[in-house]
Length: 574
Ligand code: MV4
Image (cartoon, helix red, strand yellow):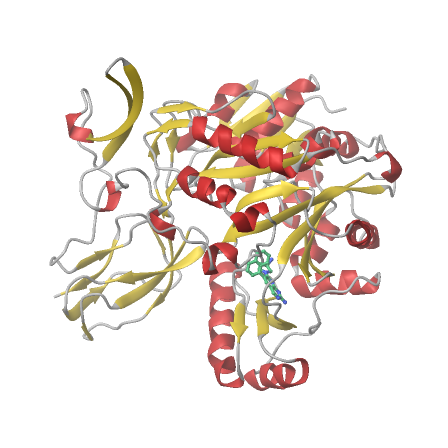
């Protein structure tokens, strides 16, 4: 086993890996950006080293700085967590070149699965079917039209080097082909630096079912149940569960075996997940994620295996401790991703800021995997995940009611969270009957009236702090939520972080950190209040930035591809 492990990550996943190492008696080394000097993963690790910087690119994506810490601290392995360097073959190779073990799959397997066309090829090679589609790069809109006429509409244009739904465009009919291809290529270039795309038939109402794998370096692979991750919005998963409900056991078993074949076909080792779309009794291979996933805890709960421990053991050269026939699935587990976002009737507006108080629920069948404690800051520079609530029960029904109990107990103050929306989802009959699909949240769930109590005022004026207070009325205690302007709080300076595109000033500011994908106006052009002037990629989605004054575009201060911070003025209308 390893002598010392560096965790090249932050937040809840860094905390999760540190704890697993500690369970095994392995000392840990954390790295941190300037913003994370006081973060929970830093407090928890045995040693912690600054790598400087604020943005991900300056810190958790700084190979040189991380490798220097690894060498200085004398670690013999690096765990990448998820995101950041977890699926980066170059980083995995750079780590290996220092004589340090990368806790993840071989770089060759990361590469095969990183390119979605070769990933399709890897499945085809072992007889696993993807959605009917192309294995070559798409070159023209005419090809899209020919494919649609042959296989039927709609057709999906996907970025070959993409993932997470970015760069995917759905084409309903021939007339849309040219524009959709242009948009897909533009998005692919903005996110992944390459514009190659390919085609697939588009399934209109699928469920997202994925198979967890663990593979050792001796050719053994087992699948550990499945997860249903169909409750998502704009490719952001909101709720995940294990096992996948409402699917015939033979189908699930075939899916598990297909996943094992895909992994063995590319000499895979360590933890990985094979994603499928499931529709009308059939499943189709989609892609393989070559990392530990956010939602791994639901699998741990129903199978009884600690996935991070298994990752460490197989990376250290140990054989898998189990065979496929040893794996049993018990009960049902549900994970809720709790994000610092105001549900805002379905808009899900980021709500970064200081968590003034957090008391996660506990009790039987309740697990909290978090990355923050009271007083910690959710920074606009990183993702909004506060942590994950995982609840389990003997049956799916029990798991649902326990999750609801726990969510209603959750105390979190200072930032708005997705909890009110999570409650609506779990109480919904479609979720209960497991008849929802990946389209459910966006197309049929009604979130009107669902928002952070009294609203997140961050974009309206002064920042207000949410506070929970107890009120006694007639000898009975009631909980109440109040929002107090920050300037009224004792010892609080007026918030400086607020900047807004002030009505009438003509200065258009972006509401959050991100990348300018496109400018839709030119200098000298006449605009009306409410017109879209730019497209900002932030929080993994494209957001239209509007001007709030009518007039002429006087100056444009950014160009496509620029990174911007929340509050930056990108354009002036006079
Ligand atoms: C699809 C699809 C339907 N048909 N491919 C989105 C993310 C990326 N992993 C693949 N995605 C999809 N690919 C075909 N041919 C529907 C989706 C999709 C989706 C997939 C999984 C989970 C949520 C989703 C939400 C919308 C679309």
